[in-house]
Length: 439
Image 1 (cartoon, rainbow, N blue to C red):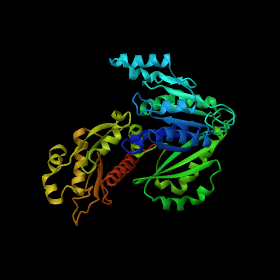
Image 2 (image 1 turned 45 degrees about the vertical axis):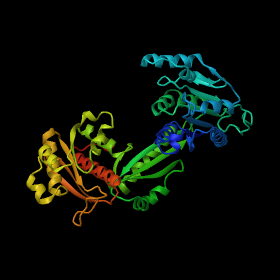
Image 3 (image 1 turned 60 degrees about the vertical axis):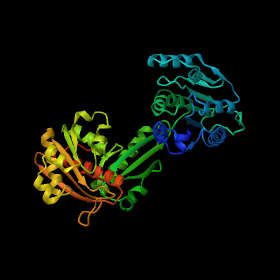
Image 4 (image 1 turned 90 degrees about the horizontal axis):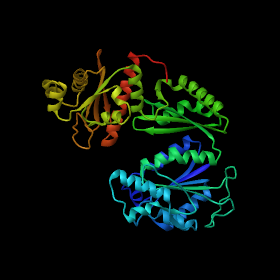
C-alpha cells in the first residue's frame, strides 16, 4: 500500500510557515505499515491542486491532503475537490452541530461565513473534527479504470478503491484526526504491511568512517531489513527498518534483534542508545532510570539545554532547573564563579566552566549538573579564543570533568553541537556511576 501527501497553503510554499505536517504524517503512516512514496507542497491554486491530485492518484492508493479548508476566500481546497469529483456542496447537519458546539464553548457568535465550515461535497464521507471547526472529508474513487476526472485508478491493494482524504492544516487537528480516525480506517480499508523501526544513536565517529567500519555487517543484513544513516549535528542515528507480510511480525522482530546484537561487537564503543529519536530523550531515560536529578548552567547555549529537557513530558521528575548566565556578573552572583577566576582566565575557560557546573549543582541541590561557556559567533573571537571555542563541564558530588570543543563560525550549529556533546558526556558519567542494563 502506498500513500502520497499533499500539503496545501501559500504560507507553506513561500516558507512563511514551516511544514511540520509532512514529517509528522510520514512518521505516522510508516508506523502503521503504509509506504509514503511522495510529499508535495503547493499553493492555494485550484489548477495546481487538480494537477497534483491527479498525479498522486496515479502513483498511490491513498492521497492525504492538508490545508485550505478555512472559511475565507483563499481556502479553496473543498471547492476544488467538489469540482474534481463532479459533486456539489451541502450543509452537513453533524458538521454544523460540531461547529456550533465549538463556537458556544468559546463564547463566539456563529457568523454566516463560519457556518460555511459545515458545507461538504455530497460524495464524501464526512468525519467530524472534534478539536476544530473544519471537518475531514473521505473520498473513495470508483473501482473502474478511471476516476470521474479521467485518472487511471486501478487499485493496487487488494482491489480496494483508492482513497482521498482531506484534513485541516492545523497541526494538532491533523494529528488527532490521523490517530483517531484516518489511520484506523486505512488499516481496515487496505491490508497493510508489517513495518518495524529500530533506532541506534551513535556518537564519536563520522558517517563515512562508520560506514566503512560496519560495511560487512550491513552487507550481511537480511533482505527484509533496510539501513538508513541519519546524521545530525554531533550525532548519527542508524535506523533499521524491517518490512514483511501481515503475519510476519515475530520473524521481523527477531531479525532486528539479531542484527542489533551482532552490531555491538563491531561498533559498540560508539553506540550511546537505542529506541530513541534524540539525545535529550536518552538523557531523560538515563536520569529517570538512575533516579538522579540534574541542573544546568548555560552561557553560550543560552537556555537551549533547558529547553530541550522541558520540551519532553516528565522532565520535572529529574530536572531541578537551570541558570542562563550570559554576563560575568550573573556567573558570579548566581553561580558563585570567582571574580578572580574570570579576571585571570576569562568567561570562556576551563576554570570558569568548572565553577559554573559545580555552582549550579550545589545551589539547586542536584545530583548532577552540566555547564557551557563559549564563543558561538559569528563575532567575538580572538586569536587565542577563536569563534567556535567552547568549554563544557559535567559535575557530581565526586568532582567536575571539563572538555574543550572547537566548532566553526556557524552559531546555530555550534549551539546544537555543544548541546549534543554535553548530553553525551552526562550520559557516560551517569551510566558509569549507576550501571544499568543495556536498553
